Length: 411
Image 1: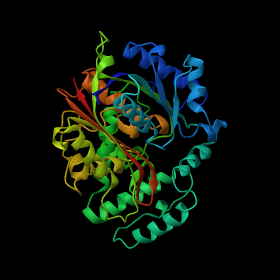
Image 2: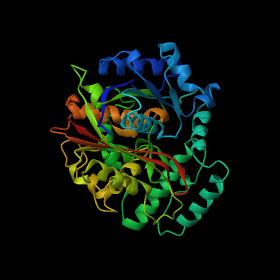
Image 3: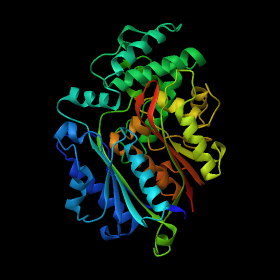
Image 4: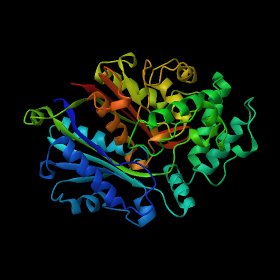
């Protein structure tokens, strides 16, 4: 089994495009990735396409990848549709990597696209609930709220689950309050993470939110679900991202390639556990580190799934960048900023780059490949050789239903 390389990345600007279409977003990302890789559409031997919500908004429940790629001239090749909630795009990449690693194909496309913004905002918010067990989640949330009520932590009244926000903001808020009660993490630490990501986002031309905010401005933003303010939460938005990967043999025929090696690709499923159990991401990350023959101390930058600032705090611990319970301290120290020991979410993360569900995992890949090529401009991490992406999808119980970790190496 030979090495596998990313030879092209492409993405659209993320944002709210009420008048745009899923097809137009996909076409833009595919055009960009083919140009970046220096290959033609006829060179692509298979495609893996991620999308979660197109069916909810436009009744396109099936053959989404075929509908997206056929107008662009992709015919006869296998087109595989992947749906894994927020981790759909990382799943598409994992399947593409698996096929190339096994020697089935030499050059394949992974594409993620989503359009979630809608004139009916509640339709957008309700779509997120489909990333849970729809039969059981109301009861599960009630049980979690009851358990959290036993914690010695004062919770403002507006933090009860309600309308006007994604249910995931409530789930993340519950996790944040548990972390605060157990480890002493603070709302100011979450604000430090969000302020850092707003600063990084300002340097990313593809980011949905490019507004610099101080820590105090983050704290004083509109409350969502304690301890979160709006600036600590990812926005609703639209966009597409893509990558082309190839085998080592195929790479030999490319004269102007700027390859980045995929050193590890690991996918896992959440477990039934309580709040004190080991996070699925820790298990998946351990396998990824072993596969790449590196450890967390070797990683030069990371893109972590921060649907809220707490997501980054938690995953920085889970990925091994700091001891358990010290994710907030790590952020406060400045270690996760550009120029710090382990820059995290140099793209602005989901909080500021944006979070079109089916595209987010490949947007992370766009960022780390750009960094490892040394092409990130003002947000470049100097001397970066190793990068990690962590992408979670959906919830089962108290943790992600899907956990994906990829490790990339500069050639």
